[in-house]
Length: 384
Image (tube, rainbow, N blue to C red):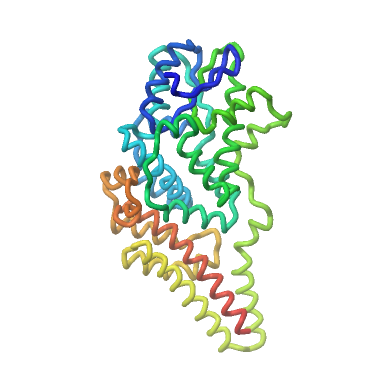
């Protein structure tokens, strides 16, 4: 088991580094529980990920509808892409990603040891990462995930002794997306270390975490933390939008209504009709086109075209919600579709799989609606 890297912080804390796709990591967990004799097993999991692993929870129609309503389609798409990177290698070795974490939970329960979950909620992490990225970073990150180069043979032993695949991926992308790298790697190192440090000092702790976090977490635990009040709470919170960020989506509708009011006071009825036609056409065409690119049903495309000119005037609504809902109702995913999508063993599932297509229709229709609003606003402004 010496192949699995570990660091003893002191006599009571051992960090075991694992690769989320290596079989030897699964075996190493059982070995270290016996060898180190901990009184608590800390695991790099949040409650939702633990539930997914231990209860075999699957995406269902209700949760898919909730994703659409809460505007989480882009986050789910990114999470699926990141998970697919791990899953490809895990399947090749006969190990599902996260199996060593599940093993840690199972072994702890077999020995009647308490399990401490020390990772941040995955949705919080993804939302902080998305918010921390600029527009160019988001485009670059998605492009890197989607249009990846032909797969190369990967040495799992090298992955194990270096870092877990997710961290490896993000470190490679740090040049492209430093904002995402800071949240997915650096922030999580600090968060996990603080959670471990907060466990009762009387406990002897075996912490099972991805090898990519091993050095970073160990550094915090050995050197201590900056004396910052409520730092853990801060890391666990999605930053609130600034006043400008909250106001920004309203700029176009306010400007449009302002232009219409000004044209009305000038008695320029023809210009009002022209501006209104440009707004309707640009919004409808852009949203419909993006919905079509996502493989939307004709009725979903029509819904996108009808909803976009209206939802663009109200940032509290999104055309993708309506198009995605119609897509889901007309081409309702089966239980098999929903389970198969979670495997995401090929990128084409976003179009071929009904669940993937619902998410893609929702996300791309929103993108098209946003582009349509800006394009129409630019054309109207140029024509004044």
